[in-house]
Length: 486
Image 1 (cartoon, rainbow, N blue to C red):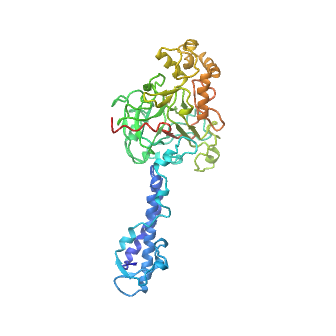
Image 2 (image 1 turned 90 degrees about the vertical axis):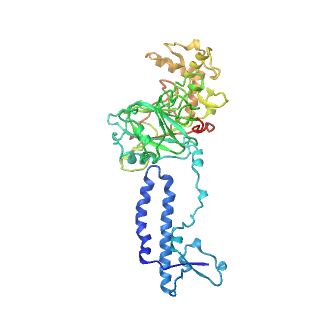
Image 3 (image 1 turned 45 degrees about the horizontal axis):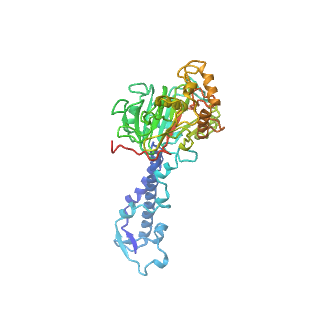
């Protein structure tokens, strides 16, 4: 049966023509807003609906001029979208004409060219683990961060080539992303980003805006709601992100899992930053992103590690940047003091030589060699059973000065002594080699610190001050959000 429409009035015919230019302007703006990348399909659907509305209206107008003058005027089959036609064999011999309200066909979206099931779900995307090479990227595109943050603070950074200690580097834009499949609390601290300080993060986190895709995040100050250890905290659901000022000194952040409603009593890294050196699950280490502006960033695994992480730095393709290109950093280290544009900390429990196991037999983190030394001391033994081939405490403690051994010391003479220890000690070599295999740079070198004064690694350039840090839960999938139980 063919559907017929009452002849639309001239004003109705103009509606799709009027709205199409508005949609052409609106759709790119909507898609460029923070958090709107997942909203592109509704925008495309709206454009598609308007297109078909115009198609049907014009077809109805053309047909009605040649049709008999009556209330229900049939629309020619050729004016319908191809996917709405029947085959010739399927057409009835005597087509009936039925008057239908025009609004029914105008607002009904036609089928998409590809079925909705062809698009991967957020869970499927995140399951690929954004912290490992080849994984999907989530959050705001790196090159959009500066434009989004411009309404909230001024980006002040030196021009390329980007150095390590340029006094023109004052404040950039940092994006923190939950690239995992479970809710995550981000713990952080530093001089200048805390309560009432120049770049206090809390107002940006707790207010919905373009900085977080218009999703305000739960927030807890250290000492409130039983939040202990180090650092304030805020919660990110899978795929959520937060843009904050990238500035200040002695700053750090890390992720925690299996937390209660206010970020307390987490199962993974419950103390935030640390201490991360004793034998109990309460002292689990955390994978840390650290920075000082002006200065450099580093990812420290000196106190051990837990969650995988990925760090992206914009502006490290200096040749294109100088040419005025807006192409995101491609990975070239030119102009960024030898730093890569992307650093993967693809941390894997299977490669950890010094595993921390909780009471339920689950892996909850990896001890550093300093952590092994302190764990043995806390247990009153010479060697931590969880750290194969480590040297006896009585052979290294207080050498050359306290605390000595794997943990080093403040005196100048300790630096070469510690380097020598890690270069020849089997346990120290095993820990650092494991980190090199999981967190190497494009030249095959260790990209992050495995021990204090690590000559084989180093700090990294900030590029143009636009940084993106993604944290993942691969290897920790069993640690679920506990906000509904505590």
